[in-house]
Amino acid sequence: MLLNTYAPPFKLVGGYFIAGIFFLALSVVAFFYANFDAISSLNTAGFLHIFFVGFVMSIIIGALYQLTSVILEKPFFTAKGAILNLAIFCLSLLGMCYGMLFAEAKILQISGVLLFCSLAFFATTYALSFMDNEKKSFAAFALFVSAIFLIIGITLGFCLLMILSGTLMLDFEMTLKFHVYFVLGFVFLVILGAASVLLPMFALAHDLKFTLSKASLACYILGGILLAFNENLSVLSICLAALLFIAQAFYILKKRVRKAYDYWNVNIVLSLVALLGAAVFIALDKLNLAAYFLIYGFLFAFIVAHLYKIAPFLIWYHYVAPFVGKVKVPLLDAMILKKIAYFGIAFNAISLLCYLFSTCFELENLVHVGMIFIAFSIVLLSINIINIFRFTGFKG
Image (cartoon, rainbow, N blue to C red):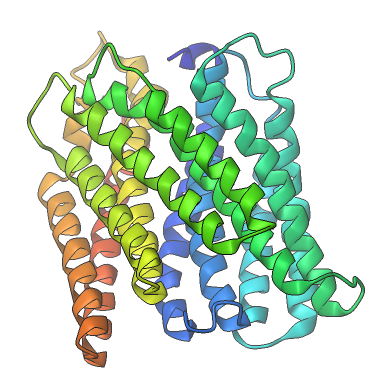
């Protein structure tokens, strides 16, 4: 994977991973402040930013510092200042979400500006990494488009901040819709591009075609064009993009050489089923269910699956590999506490069922039960991540 040439400092990648787990745990508390019937309320925005920016984007940014170099076969533009930027990112996000959840306008504005600067720093260095790129592949193209989406998305987020403060006169609702579209687009396109590399690699699948992934990317971009004219058609196009990605992922899993199921592909299957459920619930106008299945079903399970592959590999490379041939070294698989990983998957699935039944049968208490199971799943994930990070002290 060309790690020996282009590897960034692990403390940078690991720092983003740790931040992601922290914000994931925090999202369980913030969830109870959210109201998905008032999706544009500040309370709901606070929860969504804790989960999407704090967890999802932290993990993605950490992974991109490594993955961009692998896919482009050239170094990331620069990692200078990235550790300081990580600290600014975490503190400003905490401040902004506090301002949203507790209606502290001044804290929200100051923290929002700092968060914009932090994300703009990463987005700029990420986009500049594509300069003079000679590697032509679907993954490289998807990541390049994702860089554009991120820049537009965070700029629109900054515009929303100025609209709220009364310094910019724009249509708030339309700006919000495009902000959500572009930021979710960044996440979706990174997943789409990375999956075209990581899914075949981890599944040991060969001789693959990515026609469905290309169609998925086209449908998502079409959804943005349609958003300016017809919101329903836009949602339909984006749902189609999700369905095409699901089909591509199942196609890759079907072609895998090793047919046995493990904590990676079980998480992947759960995430894809949850994404399918989210698409169906959107079509049925069940936004509460769609949001929960997208957040704690698809994104949570999909990211956890790859954390269990990427984190052990990076730590093994940086801290264990130098001892190969000198002492007995652990295998990657031995770095994962498997029973804990499987219990985490089970608790995640139970939480989805609890939320589904709570909504269908109006059983409010089941929502709390579902969140308890998600909390258990996050605790088990944290235990596994701590165990993996324990190998940074490997001395043979």
